[in-house]
Length: 305
Image (cartoon, rainbow, N blue to C red; front, side, top):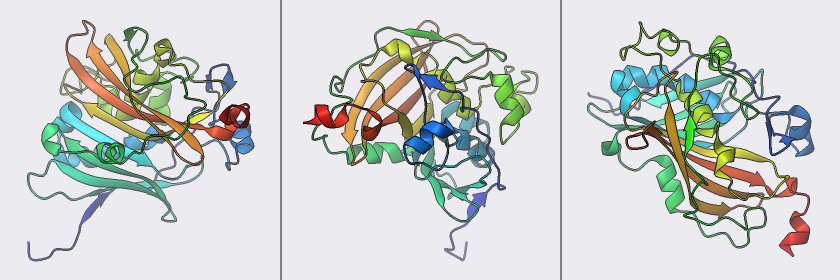
């Protein structure tokens, strides 16, 4: 090529839809509820971060084909919230021939950044964006909401989980896969019809892997003080032996791999490993930075002293 001009793939502007207005955890509503979001100083209840992952899937399939679904890793840092009615566009850099890692990002119609990410294929893709970010974390000075958590703490028990097409996904995700597929930004017959899928089974969309991985998260019983409101600040989904299938039994094991703090939040980073039903074969992983808002915990100032 005679030019060094960077070239990017991009998708169309999409308006992702809010499906978590009725979300509930630990007995209270979440930041996705408009009234709760406004109490905490936000414009309105934001669209859940991984909803935007769907816009990247066609672009990454165009780069890596079927292998993206089997060994792909999307590693994202969320930058600005999106509310229903706003438009978002996904971008991926055009990789050099044979490259196993690319830069990705999403913007609102006015150019406001939504997220930055790396997308990679297998271990040969090298260090992900979140691995880079975790390497720069400094130990927190004082934790209040998360004071009972420790790095290395594991979930209380193994968590059997599955996602059927019409299965209601609980208080955290008050909808089914089929309901999501009616509103998902990028539609594919592979999500609902096994006859069309290269694997002969319907596959779980990338954004719904987050739902599967969080469905039984309460079972881990990590001692986070309540009531406190949190949000996803960073999220990475990695296929090890993918894709994950609709109607398949899996087993999840969780571990806290980092604790961190900012001016406004206390964060615990959880790696959720998704195995086959026997618990012997690793299929996928999710790394999630749960950022809890300090001022959402009513006893924060008192306990911090």
